[in-house]
Length: 316
Image (cartoon, rainbow, N blue to C red; front, side, top):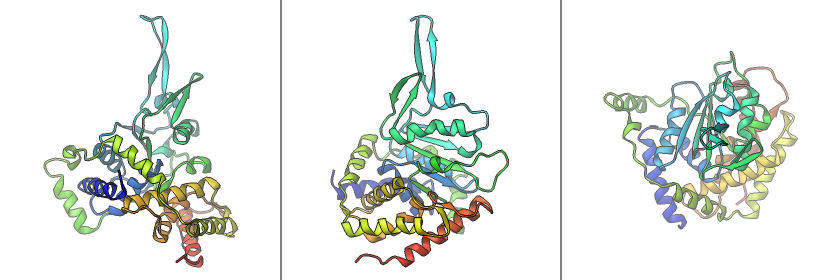
């Protein structure tokens, strides 16, 4: 598969998802780029704007297996990973796989569960495998975790630690739809929900082929230096207690490659870096001050990264 063929297929995929998530093309492109970059997506926004629907629509559009896990305070790691049980007929222990064994896993309201259960996702997100009772089980490919959290609700929540946030390649917000788009959303659900009639337009094998295509996207050294300058500025900024980690640098690199494929190119441009810097880096920094809500801290981080992008010369 070449980049032109991939672009055509991806445009069909994005259009297909747009029939369910209306007026949010950039959000859909970010989700698709995360999938192509073998990454994971964190969506932080208010309830009822389509966070769960985005994951379901993406899975249906690529013929992928999909599981939604509702995270609650009493959820256990075994509820996600699976459990080993004794089979009396065979007189042997058998592993019963949990919902993590899916192509796309929706971790709904991930900050509602305890840190112990949150950490059960770390190995899966980092190594595409899980370990249970001293045995390691590979996960299906492609594999992607889409996690959601509601920033406006704080009672009974467990904020994700920096180490967990660092595993998410991008963090995005969907936002409210425009008036005309919201009108069409209401009209489209009068008789049947669009997700019920959504049909797959890609196979998981084609997605894996596109993921391999991402690895071959060219990144000029000047653009890599541009990325490194942005990362170093986050570490030098007096606004941040901790800047972007080396993992963040790697993820920004891959995110730019994935966006280039979504845009139908075999090379990265400065526009790719500027488009992916915010969703790839803003959730990785730690603010000097812990005062204020999560939303206020995130807005402060985004404002500082915006200033950093404005200060660093763009390579021509």
